[in-house]
Image (tube, rainbow, N blue to C red; front, side, top):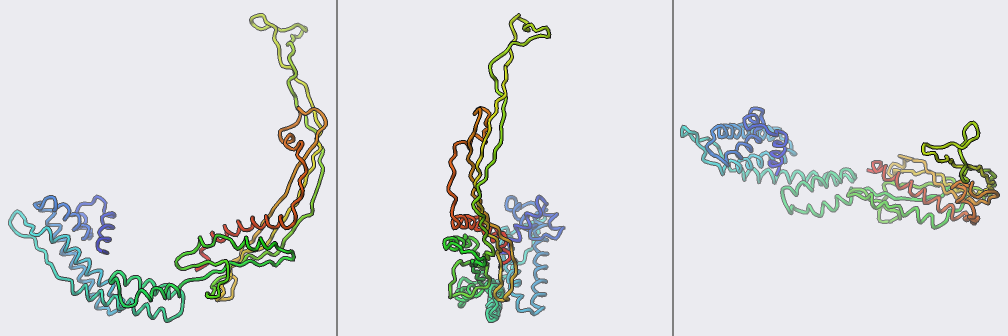
Amino acid sequence: MKFIFIIVISILISGCSSPLKLLNSGQYDAAIYKSAKKLRRNKTKEKHIRVLEEAYRKANEEDERRVARLKGEGRPDCWDDVFNVYHTMDSRQQIVRPLIPLKYKSGKEAKFIFVDYNEEIKNSRQRAAEYLYASAQRLLDSKNKMDARRAYAELDKIGLYYDDYKDVRQLKVKAHQAGITYVLMGVKNNSREVMPAELDEELRKLPISDLNTFWIQYHNKVNKEFNYDFTILIDMKSIIISPEQVSENNYKEEKELQDGWQYLLDKNGNVKKDSLGNDIKVPKYVKVGVNVKEVHQFKKASILGSLDYFNNNLNQLVKSENLVGENIFENHTATFFGDERALSPESRKKIGAPPKPFPNNAAMVFNAGLVLKEMCKNIVFNNRGVIN
């Protein structure tokens, strides 16, 4: 488990370093791993035997000192570390044992001491689980959400030692429920205008469920089974609807157009010739103009407000973002007098387009609310860190 992880990290860090370089730099387990790998291919390489023997001895001596220090400190939370050290020492033996015996050319056999760590592993596993279990129970008794989350982590750690320890599964459910932060999304109309009922419903349809995590749950409707830790409130403070406006604009457009050909004359009034003796002709241009009468329709609805984050447990506003949702209705229609060929592409699009009926106030406010909804969605997603 942890030993294999340490070995992998050691190999990644050490790169192409030789077993001897790893040994000399104190990376004993990486040196063991690499020298053992080479000896599995050829057990007669003395330089690798020597490295394996020394790295194995030094690694075990280092771990034995660490275990003695941990036990000597007398901390009740030391047993997780003690278990990992014993497990590392046992795993190290499993790497070396299949290579035994290893002999030098002199006939001397490399010395490796193997120890049965089963009892130490069993004892440290049990004591680590006991400590984690007791710690989790103390944390749960505090009735604090952050403590409940720490309790869940402690209980989850027990799973590294035992698949089914006491009532850990039930306690994890309890810790999870106690550690969840519940957030309510609300809408409030503080303006003096009537808000369409459909808009209130639409604003509550923000895809907040996409924000749900293991520890944070968002609701857009009140559920009396839960006490909400935070409220995110869409507060509409002002709804402004402009009058229906119709304005006229008269303007002129001109354009030069080709209108046939004419002969190119010299300074004496004679027709010029090209190199082959042919008469030279050039395009003839004429200026045309047109008068345009444009009718512009305009109406605008704006919703001004804020997106407010309240910590309900502290009865405190913790963040506020301004909101602006706008919906603009515009229509252009036009008639012309003069040469149609002078019309620009923009003016040509307006010609013949009929006037449109102005949308009613409710429709304008609803569409402005859809813009506001999109803005709220972006703000909520970008401020996920406000909720804990």
